[in-house]
Structures are given as C-alpha cells and as structure tokens.
Image 1: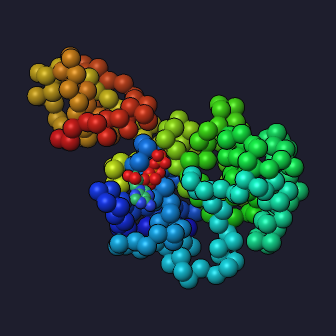
Image 2 (image 1 turned 60 degrees about the vertical axis):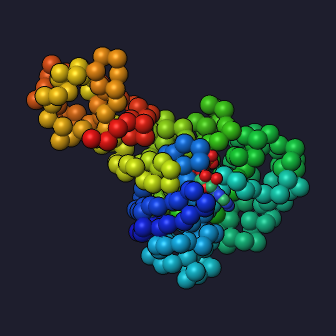
Length: 283
Ligand SMILES: Nc1ncnc2c1ncn2[C@@H]1O[C@H](COP(=O)(O)OP(=O)(O)OP(=O)(O)O)[C@@H](O)[C@H]1O
C-alpha cells in the first residue's frame, strides 16, 4: 500500500476529522468534498504535518517519521493553502528543486512550463492565480515521485487549463507503479480521472467506491408514496422527499430494474449521488 490511514482522528474546536483511507499502487484515488469538509486536514494528516489525536498513517508501509530521505523524495505534494514564495521565478524554483530532488528533470520541467504558457523569468507574485496553481503541480510532477498528493490542483483553473492538467496527470501514471491522491470539489474532474472515489463530509468518509461501480450500479428511483411503502428497501441508501413522493438512492440499480421495471429510474451523475449521500435521509 502506498498510503494507508487507519481510523485517524483530528479535532479543531467543533470540527473532527475521522477517517480511514487506502491508496493502492497504480491507482488514482479521488477525494471529493465541499468547502470545509476536511480535505486539506486529511492531506496534512497524511503528510505528518499535524499531530493526530488518534490513529496511524503509513506511507510506503512505514510511519512518516521513519521514511528515509530517498522515500521522502519519492513523494510529490501540492497543498491547497501553500506554495512557493512570490519572489521566486520558475528558474529559481528549478534551482531549489534540483537541490532537493535527485531525480528532478529540469529540461522536462521547463518544457512543461513552456507548453503551459508559463514565463520562466517572472516572479510568482506577478503570475495569475491559475498560473501559480500550474507551477505548483508541474513542480510536484517534476521528480518522478511514485506517490503524488494533490490537494485541489485544479482550483482556479479555467476549463482548458483544467483539461490540460488532467491530461498531464494521466500521462504521469503511464509508468504503472505510481499512485495519486487528488482532491477536488469539482466531481466531474475526478469522475473522468480516478479509479476510486472517497466522499468526505463534515470530516467523515460517507462513501468509498470504485468509480466504475459508482457510475454503473448507483442510480436514482423516483417513486410515489405508495410505491415507496411497498418497495424492497434492502439496497436503498438515502431518501429525499419530493413533490411527487420520494427520490431514492440505490447502489444496486440493476436489482430494481429487474424486480420493479415500472418504477422511474435514472443513472444519476456523481454530483447527484453526492447530493443524496449528504442531504438525503438515511433509512
Ligand atoms: N489550523 C486550524 N485551526 C482551527 N480549525 C481549522 C484549522 N485548519 C482547519 N480547520 C477547520 O477544519 C475544517 C476543515 O477544513 P479543511 O481546510 O480541511 O477543509 P477543506 O475540505 O479543505 O475545505 P476547502 O475546500 O474550503 O479548502 C474547517 O471547519 C476549518 O475551519
């Protein structure tokens, strides 16, 4: 396992992060959550930047404190609320990266920056927010790290820049033994990129599912009150009152398609599943 968080807990006042998460080799794992759901707190916990109240984090099967320098170099990190000093140019950043990471590939880093239209000699403070975001991600991907931890890397990027970044992330995975943990509040970004998805809400993981299963087996049933009363609710996860009766979320749409073909059903996007998981009533 490249990253494993086992029942970790961290409390800030009335907010508590309480979660478990696993990142397998060769996987892109996505973390979706609304503002304040706990994504950054989870990432900082993974990186040993916070003192946990409970639980354990292992990276490359070891506690963070026991990682060798070489193993630490095998990680590339983007945190939502930190970045390079605004006084550094991309060329300065390259010099720093070269000193920090044995495998830093300067030519490739400059090439990628040029392809993204980033000026090499301008200071960070004079770049646009989207440009700064791209520099952070390109730097994290510049030293052949086996584990990439990307907290909201697409934040502030326009549609084209987001697509370009998602392509670079896919390309990064080509060697096969790499893994990425990536967060976003834009579910469509993650749904087309990730092998599995975790949904975090108020510090808790409320859903963990392979993306194919989420897109293939989850669905919404639209039923009248009468239909709802008679329904076999074994595979219903959430219920929401609507004018016509109820909207129901299932993780086995095939079961209801076969057993209750008269019911109105739809696949439901990842966003709809998320909304139902967070706002819907548990049965
Ligand atoms: N250093 C801190 N001190 C006190 N509370 C904190 C601290 N860091 C985070 N929190 C609280 O923890 C909760 C989760 O914050 P976090 O930054 O992890 O959310 P997030 O999912 O990354 O949100 P966003 O999408 O807005 O970046 C919030 O209620 C926040 O106020």
